[in-house]
Length: 372
Image (cartoon, rainbow, N blue to C red; front, side, top):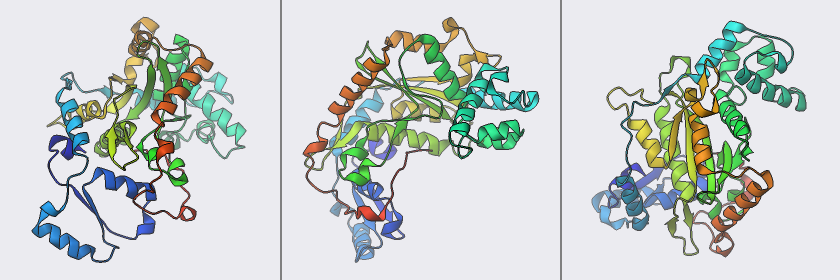
């Protein structure tokens, strides 16, 4: 996508190896929309076809040129940030606090820090409800297994905790929560078939803006890199957000053409870690998130002071939520969200043409969320 949106007239060819049954079917189907040609080496005569392409690349026809040109035009209008890249220590500071203070009791209510208490309280409830099968962060906490706590990202997630605390304090309605994602519509769902229905793309929180009459997605995202903050995986994380932005807005119509819809949602990113880790091009990954479609990017630790939630007047996320004038009634939110999704899926029932990749639904158990 990065190349096609910059140079819409280049020909993009993907060559796949291995065996067909090692690839998720919806991935194979999606590839045929995002690349001008997909050559599968398990298919007969594929190597001969590749040789022919090498001699005469023009035999590959350009696909979806209008989409790539539209994205190129949108990207040319982005006001790319020149501010210092976000460098947040929220999760690291939380872990250092919990490591220094140690176990404070046998109940989450005994934990003195409100953010840690929120994380461990959620883990505790899940641990009890699943009879120890899930929410193991609580077991790690009471056993002072601090390294295991660091590796646990479901409940030991201060970023999601401070988002939820901010939303509750603002008294706005929201879906999702700490370790509770909300499925959102994407191009994958318009490919047709129950295999695609079982794929998931999700956001951490969903709100609804009265000001713009559209949903608000709130995503907590870390640059990764462990406690050393080395940033080895940050490129993949940024590219994954580019992919999200693309599949959130594209759909396949009844003629099997890929269409880019208007961006009819607000996207907020709360970033933790060092997003300027690349010294030569420190703005690279922030700019990629802007290209993905994020409207607001905030440092996770800008919501805290001394590892406690800041006052509402000092909370940048609260300012955005107030400005968007979000619904404050849960049932009204559910209704607005449902109506918006119906409009997004309006063409799905019209799709009678099978996907380009034939799928034997019994071969796969697909319940995947697009993740880092």
